[in-house]
Amino acid sequence: MLLSHPSNAGGKMSELERFIGIRAFISGETRFGRENSEPVCQTASTHKRLTLPPVKLSRSFVSHLAVTANLQCAQSVAIESGRYCTCFGSGRWVASIRLLLTPCGLACGPGRGYGNRRHPKKLTPLAYKQFIPNVAEKTLGASGKYEGKITKNSERYKELIPNYNPDIIFKDEENTNADRLMTKRCKDKLNSLAISVMNQWPGVKLRVTEGWDEDGHHSDESLHYEGRAVDITTSDRDKSKYGMLSRLAVEAGFDWVYYESKAHIHCSVKAENSVAAKSGGCFPGSGTVTLADGRRKHIRDLKVGDRVLAADERGNVLLSDFIMFMDHDPKTRRQFIVIETSEPLTKLTLTAAHLVFIGNASDSLGATATFASNVKPGDKVLVSDGTRKALKSVTVKRIYTEEHEGSYAPVTAHGTIIVDQVLASCYAVIENHKWAHWAFAPVRLSHKLMTWLFPARDSNVTFQEDGIHWYSNVLFHIGSWLLDRDSFHPLGISHLS
Image 1 (tube, rainbow, N blue to C red):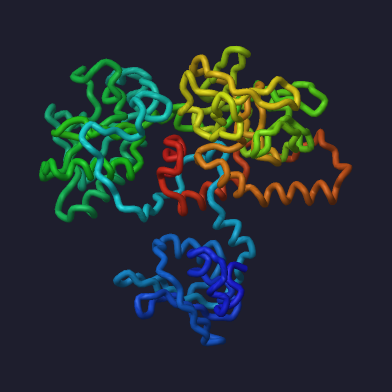
Image 2 (cartoon, helix red, strand yellow):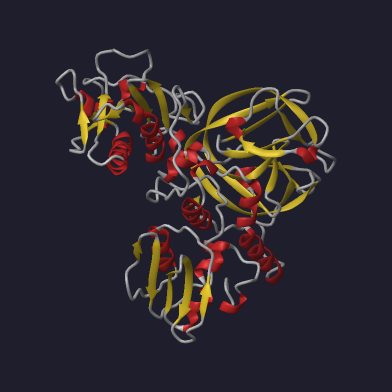
């Protein structure tokens, strides 16, 4: 239990754990509220009172906890002047609530969307000429590559849909309604932004000055030609609002936002069928790992019970049990980043949002996890010679991309894996490797129990179906509620939006 008794309020518990007061649910009716500017928890059966430190929880998050716990709600959530007052009747508390509150440890990331997340931090306006994410627009970490101009005679013209949202003003200089045409993803993000604008500035609407362009008025390979970009202002054309408008566009889920001009903000999205929009963190099935007997094995052929080369937190090479695939997708074609080193020549192929360890030239203990998309020539990756000797820091020679069919996200007991001789994390989308590894502790425990109960089970049999593992989906869902947007890779944000 997260809270054993109100009298234990002085124990070492997190702010969130003290606020929730799980034990109180068992006693009967539980009330959360604020009294004398401090949150209180009271159980109807004991009438004992617990004063708790102020904690900011969103209305949707409180409701989410109730639904997750399968509780029968006696009254609706009420939030008045910063007060939370939630009343629950008797119900069944799911014992795994601590698991559901676990920070996000992610694999390739689930498909699009679990709704908008709450962002408790104060929004900061973008500076003039700033763009988010801090990469070029048509790169994998942003809106992705240009896929070709769409004209009225194009087969892809049917991908464009009109936006007649009355809360958005379209300048439509051509009087053809062309500015209203856009991809579905662009339309969804624009409609979301329109709501944010009205909430931020009552009486002000979102204004679109440029949308789909069929006349060639933009630069070569502009995403305006595909209906994937819009230029926006506010309806009052107050330039002092444009920095915050840029931030709202980021929060609305646009894949690239640029405070491009004093006259407008430029926003763009990934293509509907973009491999970048569908990829999180995986390896291609052709990647190889080293088994206990020194043989190489393709990642796609791994079976539960295989022991592969990995490394512990001190950089020591060891054998680690293969536990499961967070994602097992043999058919989808995706884009991968190739990190190539020289002396020795190695090539690690993985998706942009996957974590890889970067170390200095002399000390593998100084290695830190970073997204593959952040690695650049001159960085040092940790390379193994295929034995259990120490890892060696090797300089990255070049970075390029390839497309492969099939993607796999293996998980080992140590949370690391040596693929094609290079040390990588088993996790992706969230940049904190330790958080992700901690979140998968229940999976490791389950594996140990199964190994203990069934020591002679056939390691050549796997029961995992294709697709993203349910546990990874759950963590992604909960992590999207608890973690800040900046904790995720831009490709992860596209899943959250």
